[in-house]
Length: 276
Image (cartoon, rainbow, N blue to C red; front, side, top):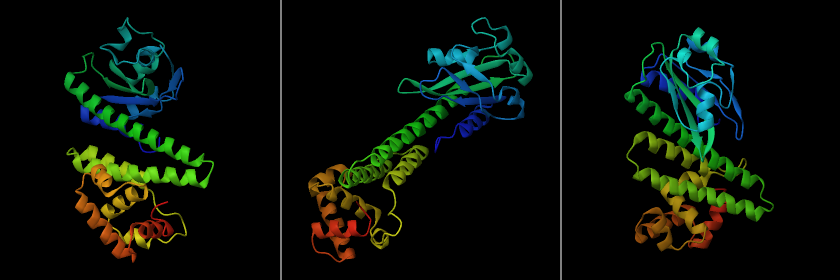
C-alpha cells in the first residue's frame, strides 16, 4: 500500500500495547483468503507465509464474521478450527487476538496480537490496538480516495475533463488545508496535511514554477476557488475567511503576478502551471 503501512501498524501495536508478538496480512478485495506476510519479530517467523482461508483458525473466523475474535489458550480453544496449531505452537504464543480492518464493509487487512501466557489480553491493550487500527483505516481511506480520483483523471476522455478533475483535486487540497487548521490532534492534523499535499500536486515537468513559489499557500487556495467560478463570498464561506480577506488575497496575488483583474490572474496562473 502506498502510504498506509501494515508493517508499521504491526510493529506499533506490539510495542505500544506491550504484546509478546504481533503479525498481520493484507486482504485483497473480494478475496476468500489471505497470506500472513507481516511479523513483528523472529519469534513470529513460523507464522510468516501462512495462507489463511475464510473461516480457518482465529483470523479466518474473524474475517468471515467481520469482527474481532480472541482465544486465551489457542491450542485448547474449542471455538476455532485448528489448522495452524503447529506454527502457532512453534511461535510460543498462546493468547491470541485477531482484529479485521474493515473499510466500507470490506475486510482490507487482518491484525493479530499475541501473548505467551494463557491470559486474556487486557482492555488497555485492546484500546491501544483499536486506536492504532483506526489511524491505519484513515490512511487506507485517503489512499483509496486519491487513487480513485487519479484513476478518473487518467481515464478522462478530453483535455477539458482532465482539467476539471485536476481543478477538483486542487479544491480538495485547499479544503483539506482549512480542515487541518481546525484539528487539534497533531497526528490527525499531520495526516490531513499529507492528504492536502498529495491532492495539491506540483506543476508538470517543463512548466514554470515561479508564480507558485511567489504566491503564499493561502493566496493559492483563493485563486483555485476563484478559477472554479466561485464568487468572493462563496470562497470566503468555503475557506472560512472573511470576504474582505479573500479580496485582500486576490489583490496581493494580482500584484505579485503583474495583472489587474481576476480573469488575467487566472490566465497567468494557468499559463505558469500553478492551476489547470
